[in-house]
Amino acid sequence: MNLALFATMIQFLNVTAGDSERTATPSADQHSTENPTPQLPPDPSGKLYQKFEMQRGFYISSDVGVMLVFNGAASVTSTAEPYIGLNIGYDFNRWLSWQIHAGRGFAASAARTSNEDARIRDFSFTNVMSGPIVWLRVWERLAIELKAQAGISIFDPVPVESSQDSVSNLALSVVQPIVGGGIALKYLTLLTDFTLGLEVTFNYIIPTAIPMIAISPTVRYTF
Image 1 (cartoon, rainbow, N blue to C red):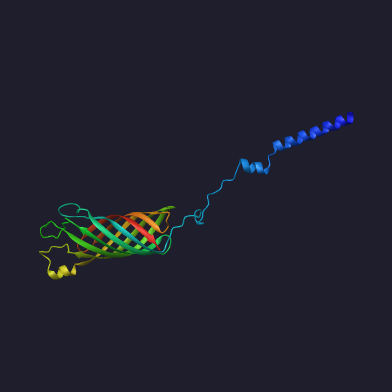
Image 2: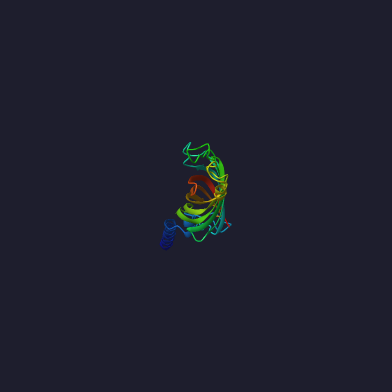
């Protein structure tokens, strides 16, 4: 009788100790249930979690904005007129590009001398220019663009003193050299082929001493 009671007590103690160990030490399944590992959402394209890379290569971009001619006799600037441009270029690397630009603009009430009656004040011009561009990437999707350019400007009509210049001089001055530069803020969109920006360009037509500035939003597509 005593032996049976003793065996029952030993069995009870073993069962109690086992329950205590299971309570104090959770299983691996309990760990995974209580603290699940964060799971990233699925990415069918396989590119969602890759580090962003700026698309570089051949590109085309557009400029559609307004421009002003400075240093007029009647006023400091001309009236604001539209300016439309098209750019084709190539990126040599992540920071250096070369670009060809063709743009057309207009000037109104832009007297160039004190003799306003003799001066042609309203004219249009077509710029064909080329030059290097430097990209300074300041953030993952934000870059500053600096450019220098030179080329020719074609006038219609020529903004000169029509009463003093001969017909031959007028014909020769239809095409005039032009130099310039600009700065732009570019945003690299989630569509890596497209870039949006805002650009300010200053140009100077040398023979007739005409400074002008253009402000335009830009859209770029990289092939």
